[in-house]
Image (tube, rainbow, N blue to C red; front, side, top):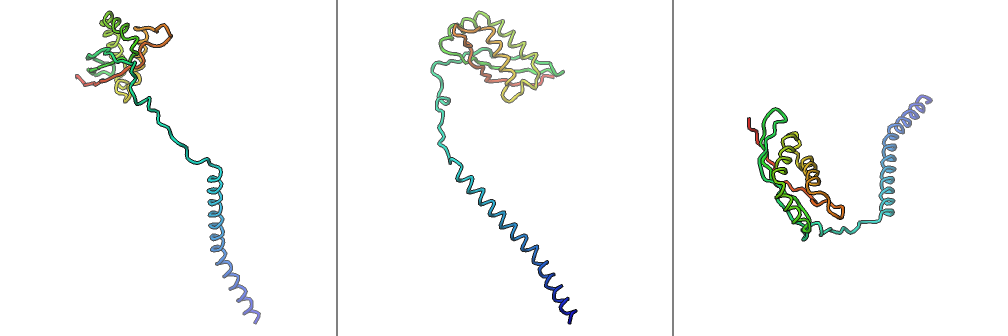
Length: 174
């Protein structure tokens, strides 16, 4: 009889042990759900909600007081990487209308110097930089050149606002 009671107590304790992991997992799952719900409620109560977005339409409209002037349209060779590339470039200057006459006169008076300096930039720049998606390096060098050629106006502003590279296509020659 004592053995039967011992067997019964062992079987009930083993049932409790078998049920315990299931109960433990259920309790942990319930606690995690409650924690997630608590975090959701806390964030919902403390957030300010969606804000209205305003479009900047001035960036979409062209500036009426801006003009574009052709700086150069030519072909230049580049041999910096052992192979010879020919780059066809078409470069424009975006300027304020008030500087247009000054820049046109300067372009006409110094056209050969400009052609030489732009050619020097193209010839000495690494081909990888001439193939950048945004041509950032070339734009920066040309903007520095334009600051040097066209100087700063009386209001300490650049005469050339932006360099526009309409075309910069390279082909291998050899």
